[in-house]
Length: 212
Image (cartoon, rainbow, N blue to C red; front, side, top):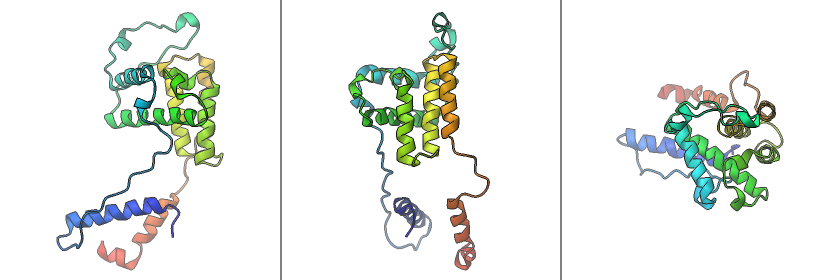
């Protein structure tokens, strides 16, 4: 009887496996943890090759392998666009997470009825602005019942970074996406989260304290 039974099952499996590996007399064998359900993203290979290639170029930039970026001129200035920010290399884990968020954003657009085969570049996720709005609305309804949530905030931030740093959007468009991000970002917690409160309460039990 808990709010997230699947998460609790993964926690129990992790604790059991730790005991199997660290306690010599622990009975039983290692358990297989069930993975988290990914309901919003589709494999990159299901998108058109141009989109896959653009994601690859973006990944190169995140890794710091796009040397042309160092010497590129302001290619957006003539159109009145915004100068794309120089991307400093990210850690592999951060890059993996960023690319997953991109797939989630693209998946949301597809689920909402947009033709997957028409998504041929990262720009297609953020232009025109009704597309990032559709993506953010999708996660607002699915994850927060219309209220801000951490995942929605991360999606909105990813769209903002794409528009500003990779697609070179105009300042007015960047400002709009920045405003949306602020509105879907949850307020900073003022105390312990419910999850941490439960964990501390469990540690206060006599048996748990004796084991410490």
